[in-house]
Length: 98
Image (cartoon, rainbow, N blue to C red; front, side, top):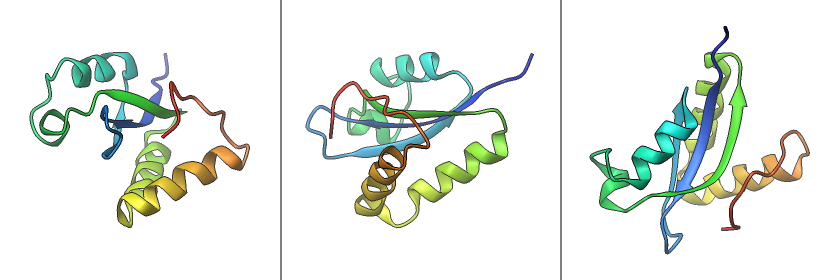
């Protein structure tokens, strides 16, 4: 059985924070964020709304995508995210738009 790795982005209620993470269990990880089980940045800023995810079969590809998405701060991260959606290489998987 092969594992799937997800690069995901989450935000908070006011949508001023954009957090990028990687996990091999997206459902578990989102649940942890929503219940405040993770100490640190995401708990402090109440990051609990999933806005994007992308699956990878190879963990190296997932880590590379996460690293690219995080480089340059929040404005660049938003541009990266929107480009990925517009490029047609992935499907938009959002519960709401940012």
